[in-house]
Amino acid sequence: MAETESTSPAPAVQMLTTEGTLEPTASAEPYLGYLDRLTDSDHEQFYRDMVVARAFDTEAANLQRQGQLALWPPCHGQEGAQVGSGRAARAQDHIFPSYREHAVGLIRGVDLLGIVEVMRGTTHSGWDVSDPANGNFRPYTLVIAAQALHATGYAMGVSFDGATATGDPETDEAVMVYFGDGSTSQGDLNEALVFAASYQTPQVFFLQNNHWAISVPVTTQSRTPLVQRGAGFGIPSVQVDGNDVLASYAVTAKHLDDARSGRGPQLIEALTYRIGAHTTSDDPTKYRTQELTDSWVARDPIVRFERFLRGKGAPESLFAGVAEQAHDFAADIRRRTHAIEDPEVGLMFDSVYADDHPVMVEQKQWLERYEREMGGDAA
Image (cartoon, rainbow, N blue to C red; front, side, top):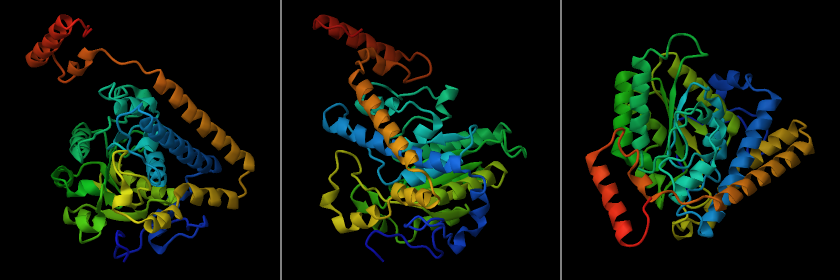
């Protein structure tokens, strides 16, 4: 076993080989029917999503290095897991991300400049979660695993409201929460699993196992494969090749359907790899070898899917058009990032509580007095 590999009693569900040929593993059999939902247009959209998300990710990382952002958490290498799962969700589903799900935000309709603003420190959230245009995509959560509790509480509410398990797949709702392997060591995640199992919430826990919790390999965090965690809570769990966008889609689609139909919470472990740093404050060369990283680069989800599309006879114009779209998208993000204006200083006190809070009011007034006395303007 490689130093940071996970193992499983059964092979991870896989549809595509690294060469891009459709050769489902035996464990993929229960999910094959979900591939029939997809058209050539869907396949092209998957590819477009992954390429545009990576271009955005690369541009944002460059902007951080140039002093435009305080921090950037890259998703390079995880696009297959994110696009497959994100496209499997229905419009009425509710998505709770951590802080690396850039491709999922793109799919749900979020203006990705909002993520840039979060990392620049000029906004509380970056997008209005109540706006239908943002696809029920909740705010990024930088407190590790806290979003698992948020998602589980929301899923309990969905169940109490009778908004799921009615038998109508066009309206039944589910909740999906994203987290990394490092989150499995947090109490919040385990508490969320307890409540989800107890209340049989209509929920999918989507674990992106990118093999590193900053500098700690997953084998140090867990002596058993993470997919086995679910069984301890009575939650059906499956391991999928997260660099295979078709497998990620099919597995997530089935388990979201199961969650919506009243079969309770589900857990998916998507095996992938964090090609870049944990964040731009991290130096991965200090704790992992280039040889290991190169072995995962060879399994790149975009390259794999491009090979699949080319094998199906996709025209060169598709790839050229997507490349141009990705370039234009990244250039637009760069232009708008440079145009971001600093917010009013008082914004930091707004929306901390739903209603006015005396402590927040007092602090805001103090800051305004201080700025006036110092010759500035807090307004």
